[in-house]
Image (cartoon, rainbow, N blue to C red; front, side, top):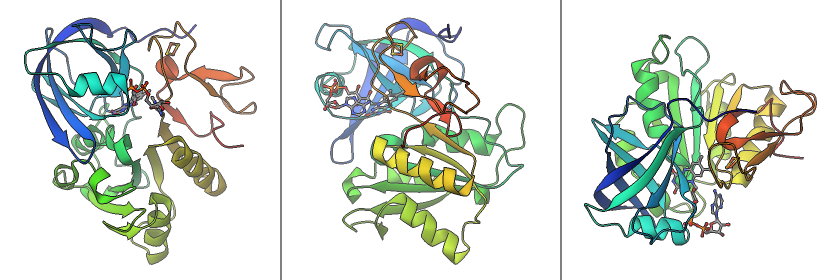
Length: 282
Ligand SMILES: Cc1cc2nc3c(=O)[nH]c(=O)nc-3n(C[C@H](O)[C@H](O)[C@H](O)COP(=O)(O)OP(=O)(O)OC[C@H]3O[C@@H](n4cnc5c(N)ncnc54)[C@H](O)[C@@H]3O)c2cc1C
Ligand code: FES
């Protein structure tokens, strides 16, 4: 049975700050009681207030940023769990379990450019993804800024969270909004098609995506049709986050590299899965 990562721990963190971000989000900064080495982008932590005001089951969140000993999370307020975390005051304690999951593959500068497709709060795993790609991962060749394209989409401009900070990282950043309030009127795949048609992004790219399920299904379809390498960071509902409760199955392709077993557990085998392994779209 797939096991949780050996470096995962359960510990307390102190809330340093909670800052509004976009129309419905917050940036939650936590100082863990133990020192954490650099966390790979697109790994995640389960978070729950320690004062009993969170639901009993902690909620999963991607690491957004790591600054010295401070971990930052970008939270979209959805329901009880995110509301409770967003209402934290400095000094409060948060149960923190992680780092969990696998994270992005090594984002190297040796192959085709990387196109990062983010939908709404699906931007969370990309801030450190860009930082780590530019710095070099796993001893591989670092990416040049020109090899990283971030295509960030949302329903409207107020949901393009922390855009200025993302633009400052050095990758090429383009936006799309459904209502046309920022960037292209449309979605990130339409934006990618436009960029490829103009030659600004080549046809052969490596794709990374995180966002709503419907968006990821469309990205998988796009990648399958064009036989592009593509990794999805899935935000499947989770219970335990460590492989015990079976709350997070993701269907696999019967003829894919995972073999005949019909599901993977997103928490311990993901949240990053390659599109040749899984079957999001029919
Ligand atoms: C690996 C991973 C990383 C994540 N990273 C982030 C992140 O960085 N930032 C962030 O804001 N969110 C992230 N999420 C999603 C986040 O965990 C959920 O939004 C959160 O659990 C909602 O809890 P809640 O108690 O506020 O809402 P609930 O009361 O549990 O639910 C409120 C509503 O949101 C829906 N919902 C809840 N969870 C999800 C989900 N995962 N996908 C789609 N709909 C959902 C419910 O169906 C319900 O309609 C991540 C999820 C996973 C699995
Ligand atoms: S969330 Fe419990 S097994 Fe994945």
